[in-house]
Each structure stands twice: as C-alpha cells, then as structure tokens.
Image (cartoon, rainbow, N blue to C red; front, side, top):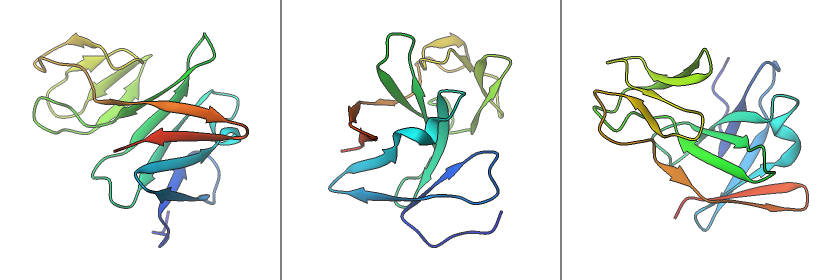
Length: 123
C-alpha cells in the first residue's frame, strides 16, 4: 500500500485507507472502522507505533500500542494472542502479559464512544 500524506490511516482488508484526524491529543476513529471483526489497527502521524482498537464483550473499547515493552519490537496478532516478532513475548487481546521476556503488558489508552466516533485519548 502506498503512503498517504494524512494524519492517520486505518489498516485492513480494504484497498484504500481512510483519513483520520488527531486533534489536541485525541485520535478520532469512525466507529464503523471496526467492521464485523470489532477491531482495527491504526497508524497515526506523530505516533511511533500502531494502535489496535477493539470492542470488548461488555461494549466498551480499548486501544493498545502495538510495541513490545521489552525491547520495542513490533506486535502482531497470532492465533488469538498479540506476539512480539523479535523475542516472542505474548499478550492477551487486552494487552496483559502472558509470556516474557517482557515484564509488563502493552501500553493502553482510554477510548470513549461519542455517537458514531471513537475518541482515543493519547495525551
């Protein structure tokens, strides 16, 4: 996929990315971006790492930074877990540590639903 000069993009199966906005430390994500899978990965200008935004079973939302706290490796979903590609640390879909060498879970951000928009508070 070609780089698009926008504030942020949604990654997914679609061939075109949707433009997002980041204002005053808040990342605004359209609720429909979660699709049927109830989650999406977001890449935003100004953030060093991707975020995974998911809907929980209780109807609330979570945003996880896809960066391993151990040595900064990239995190990807694999067989229902989030796994570091560098050293194999594993986390559940809430970001809680399942297996080291990391000693802590993934960084999380608060998410509020406001109508048809999710607001991820980054600062």
